[in-house]
Image (cartoon, rainbow, N blue to C red; front, side, top):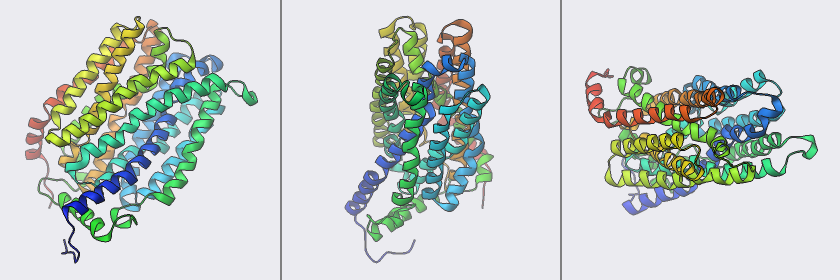
Length: 440
């Protein structure tokens, strides 16, 4: 890199990262909260929507999960486009369109319309999460990323904390107003903020440090230079086509598939599980549904920060997977005992959410540039197919056995597999690195 005229001290650089964290992370968390609420509020709408529209549990499970098929098909193109045109325009487009699609669910009358709109929400939201993961690599070097990822990914948990009570209040108070059912109001009132937030993205989100008016030019240039220098390090793949031939990418995709299965399960089925253990009032369900996500928020931040302090990634992710598997299995076994089942579900949420920020440090150890843009999206899109499989499996279990227990045991097995694969990641990574294609 060119030698800069104004030297940047370590203190100045730390201050730059602090400013970037305070300016970017709360806004990105807010956006993801909106995305998550619009993605999973169908789980609360289900409490009344199914009886109003005469949908079966399997129809709900398929509709909840088909979101991830649209997500899968359009995620890689979206992230490659972000690399070309920037995060600001990409994230604005994504946010406005998913908000409009979510609002349209209020007027669904048939199974096929339900499937089609849920699929479109997946298409429109595709690229948001991996886009943010990629976007943060433009600002923060690898040594800071588990903590930064953890701070951003608290949005998973905070969305559950906010979304549950909010959905419960809307469902409990808005039914019948202006001739609309409570679940129709849920989709309308939770979709409007996303549309407005998309226009805020265009105004407030800088694409890279050198475009941020709140950073000094020397600090911004140094931040970009640090990231660029890491991308040129030996052993990091920069070609997307070569990355797709690297077995490490596919191992990461399989691990992520297993982790996401648990996340989708607690997102879409926590309200129903709480109802199944004996709670009937929508407002009470909403507030109780927040408990697992409060615990998960704390675990996510702690695990990411501790991983950065120690420099260890693999065990932090694998142990979280074991905790998730144990919690889901215990929830399945104790589904008839309200207090114990909710406590077990909370343990599951702790393990599931704690795994996310550390997991995303694994592929970034061997990817850079366009390879990172495409492969992060590929890993996320393939992993999120579990968001289709897991809700549908739990739905089938509930429909044919009268209980979600068998479906929960299946998802617990996937979390256990995630832990086993992550335990072996370091040794497998070394072997794959020797076999991976080399690029000039």
